[in-house]
Image 1 (tube, helix red, strand yellow):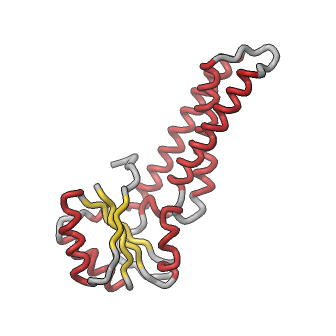
Image 2: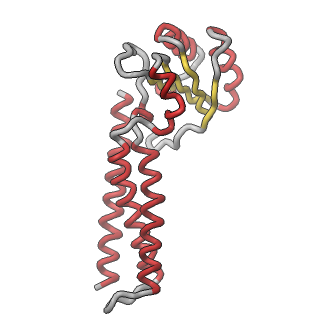
Image 3: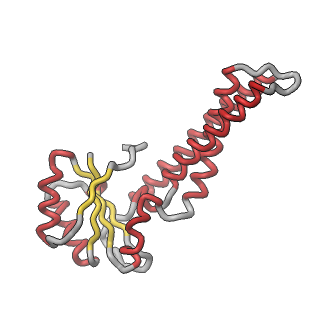
Length: 168
Length: 33
């Protein structure tokens, strides 16, 4: 799957594109629309997991926490605390535990912010444009790009990898 | 509808991580004591 991202100038255009995509066999669950607060989206789909920064923050937290934990474990290995025999197993366990704590804390904090994956679209969203993201099969990319351009030939379409799905 | 699935996904991720934390925590305590 490839995720196509493009900015739609207004709600009417966005609605038209989404209807076209649906008519061409794209399921509603593969279409995400994001607009500035206050823009009336009506029947347009919502942002799904991109609505906040939970997942990217969770990933950062796991990486940071895991690294910190393994470093702490290694430090304990070099300078063992009195009375505790520190082995490689403990270093791994502490690393895993810290990764979990880091992931949860950072993820929950990230949930309060808008998705960091969408930062480059922020100014366009502020101007009232609507970001539409569609997950499409790789072999259909060209066909669907042509379909999107049919309504507005000037539109810029970017492709990114969709985030891995925890629940398909 | 979709917001629910995003919420469920985050909840599962947090829940799963908490389970891992408890299990690993017990293992660490076992290891240290």
